[in-house]
Amino acid sequence: MDLILTVLIAFTLSIDAFSVVLATGMIDKKHIVKMSLSFGIFQGFMPVVGWFSGNEMKHFISSFDHWIAFFILSAVGIKMIYESNMEKKFKIDLKMLMILSTATSIDALAIGIAFSIINSPIIIPAIIIAIVTFFMCLSVTFISDRMKIEKAEIFGGIILILIGVKMLIEHMI
Image (cartoon, rainbow, N blue to C red; front, side, top):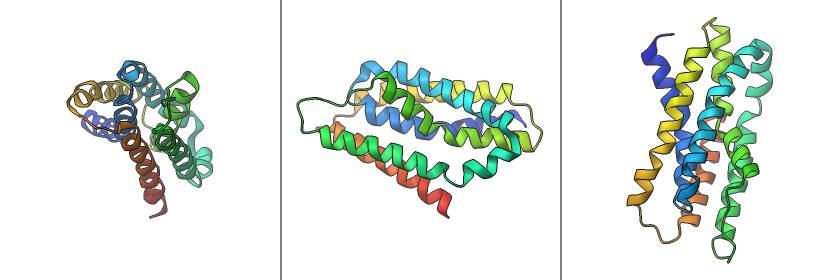
């Protein structure tokens, strides 16, 4: 697979992670680097898992991956909206970070399966995917500093729900 196509795939895979970091980073900027690193690692690791899983896993995952991502992202989004009017604010703890990292990297798993089907090596593309995702997510620091949104929790929750709906619709079409 050529480098330009690999970078385009990496950019495409990183958009969901970028959106999640943007949504939650507006609330608490101290988590942006940790989230960027987690999303980058997961986005780089999942294609390798998919590549080793090969053809058999493709049919199993493709039938419900969009539902998993939809429910996880929607649940987190609803929680953010619900907690926006409460004293206790939305927290990104390790468990939440792992859930979000997994939910946004399911497509990367499928890309790994595709790479195995076309007998393409996976290590260099996985590294590129991880690096692009990390820097895309890290760029949220500059964007969120310029955004002044009164109810960032509500906005962030809506973004997460919309990402889940987008994933669901893309797989149903």
